[in-house]
Image (tube, rainbow, N blue to C red; front, top):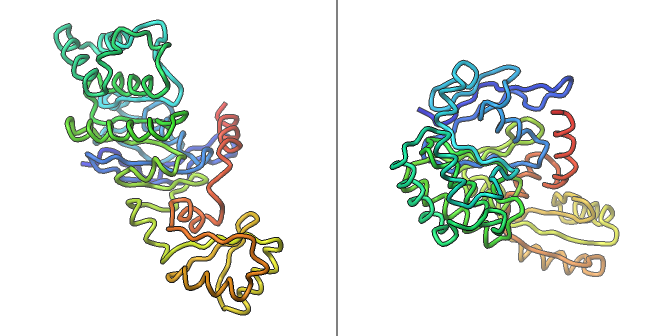
Amino acid sequence: MQAVETRDLSRNFGARRALLGVSLEVSEGKIFGLLGPNGGGKSTMFKIISTLLPPSAGTAAVFGRDVVADPGGVRALLGVVFQSPSLDKKLTVKENLEYHGRIYGLGAAERKGRIEDLLGRFHLTERAKDQVGTLSGGLARRVEIAKGMMHRPKLLLLDEPSTGLDPGARMELMAELRLARKEEGVTVLMTTHILEEAEDCDELAILDRGEIVARGTPDQLKAEISGEVLTIEADEPEQLQREIEAKLGLKAEQVSSALRLEAPKAFELSMTLGKEFGDRIRSLRIGRPTLGDVFLRKTGRLFSGEEESDKREKAVQR
């Protein structure tokens, strides 16, 4: 049985189609990422799977339970961590966990044991009596996830879990999620627009404009780009692009104000470019393929514009 399975899932907001027949399977025990710029449909998927929003067409199921036909059964299997903080800042860390455990009907002894376990797992024992409002963003995010796991969910849904965290806190967060997966067998489904965070997922689906444009492990996706990527900055990129293609027979893409080439022997090519066009090139960089390169290959656009796209999606949903 799949942890999450959608078939031809669509969602419309008036004339705008936020999801266009998305079919997706998330295997049990995986840390699965939905990667894409905000406005691409990730939040809509998140809300449908968490039973907050009905689909316009198609189906979605969590461990075989349909989100429309059996929303109560689905919610019992979920731990949900929203992008916006949901903790009570006036309560202590322990009190927030206690309150959540009571909501889910955990008995006193079970709550006590579970709180002690989660405080230790997420390195929060020494902060148990601190008010949440005094914690750093990274510590507060740990409390959010601990709260979401109080009732031992089978599926943990995380919406942009590391937004606002520095790289170190982001790495710690991912390490703690892997430990939770190992010790409790929880499946994790997260949305993200942070390429580095997506690199740490077991599997990914890249979602753009309501459609899945790529699916696989991070390494599988990057392996679709052969060799390395050269990025060239020049004063007249359009003219240089034409000359490179005419003289060397290579395909060069203009991306913003730079040129981009993929090559299996990037260093040798860089030497040729320097010899032929050195006086025209301001800078030349060689790098290994990234998930941003994969997105560009699949969509023809840079992985950018998150803030503007996010505002558009939220405006439509209102």
